[in-house]
Length: 111
Image 1 (tube, rainbow, N blue to C red):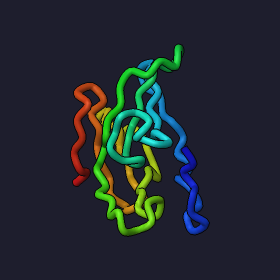
Image 2: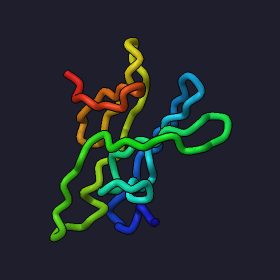
Image 3: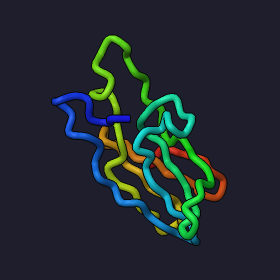
Image 4: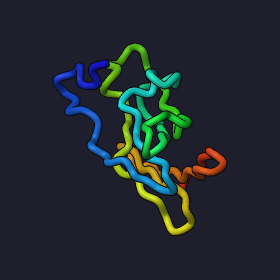
């Protein structure tokens, strides 16, 4: 799917995947391809060696107004890194930060 259908949107930010304990974590280019309701805000975990998808997680929801241009409403990750507690810290284009516990696959907003 073309994630850059609008001449106004430059496309999602280039956020490099991160690896830990043999698992590669990356932003889905289109979460809908992984069963999510939205294109944005989806984390994909894959085996770093085989590339086999292990799981996906909707990190945040982003309500879409059908009356507005779809791609201009998407909010993708702008950064992703593990913190000292082993949680994956993800910040999106709105400046909101989320903490993902990759063991329990749970998300909490960062304080």
